[in-house]
Image (cartoon, rainbow, N blue to C red; front, side, top):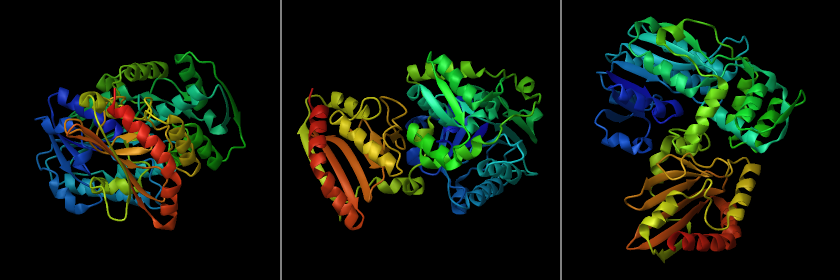
Amino acid sequence: MNILVTGATGYIGKRLIPLLLHEGHHVTCAVRDKLRADKSYLQEEQIDVIEVDFLKPETLKNIPNDIDIAYYLIHSMSNTSNDFEKLEQECAANFRTSIEKTNTKQVIYLSGITNDANLSKHLQSRKNVEHELESKSYALTIFKAGIIVGSGSSSFEIIRDLVEKLPFMIAPKWLNTKTQPLAVRDVLSFLLKSVGNKKTFNRSFDIFGPEVLTYKQMLLQFAEVRELKRYILTVPIMTPKLSSYWLYFVTSTSYKLASNLVDSMGVEIIGKPSEINAILHVNPLSYKDAVALAFEKIEQNSIISSWKDSFISSGRLKDNFHKYINVPKYGCFQDYKELEVTNSAQTMDKIWAIGGQTGWYYGNFLWRVRGYIDKVFGGIGLRRGRTNPTQLDAGDALDFWRVIYADKEKQKLLLYAEMKLPGEAWLEFKIEDNLLKQTATFRPRGILGRLYWYSVLPFHGFIFNGMIKKLALK
């Protein structure tokens, strides 16, 4: 079949596409910016990449007519706009209108479990989208999941941060809220096996794991899998705001996501039983097995997607990713250094491994200090790390940078700063004529921006000199 996948660069979309290809389907990936699509898609005969923004009706003409099945995997936990519910409904309405003009027989939507009487704004928005997607032109299949457990998922990484960093936790009372975690592998099985299955047409199913657990039990069982002894005391005095700050400073999440997660975590996410497991022959993993499987993937460096690579922290980049490839020169400050390389292939390997666990090769303590300062001022800090220790693609998160351009064959890497700054910053590495050229560019905003540049200039001289020597020389 010809299958349309929206949210193709998202956490679920990136994992679903290879499975669809393995089943022999032709996949049309709908992305807002082709630069963010996986490079391998451009060489794959069974994949077409189209640019579509469902909030921009003029782009909907790019959707082909010969679509058989469409996945709707668009949603945002990080959108803090006052009218995000309206925007998500508008997005779904535009999707429905455009899909009704094609040959699509089935739309599959991944939503959230919404059985509690008091839903968070984001869960209520998901429920509204379900109704918006209903149509007489195609069959709608809705899967409603709760906490998704898998390498790179936001919930998994937050729990990992808490368990591995804190032997003893004084935690908010919402840790006693009940939920039914589900392995990402099982989510993908439901999505994949429902393709063309008439038993799922015009029906909605809650999908969930075999256990009802509190968030506290999830933390303690996670610790058991990691063979760690952890103690948790829950207290009633933490307000939602304090809880959000607690998550924000202890984990690698952004404050926006922490706030929305806290909002959702006060709601019990218990699914309604159905026959969907039998219909699709899915036997969900236990929570402990899901955690163990996630760590297998981490140890094999085979994490396909991560929440960190979504644009949760940069309003600028969300819709204008391609505009930042051309680094400005007018009205900017630059720190330019070049050095002859002894082995260009080795230097490129070092550049492609920069950040995350590897660090920045020189002055790592100062990089960490800058990360702590960023956190204090509401930024993302360094703890976001990177998804893969040796692979980089456009759109990837890299500590408090975002990868704008990455081409190892052309020997060039361009990063854009997502830290809190009174201006904008780029960091570029490229090799030309056996010279490593390292350029830090800063476009200041007002007097404060200029003062900032001159205040960090002494540190730049120390850090960037040391870094280029470590990269260029054996």
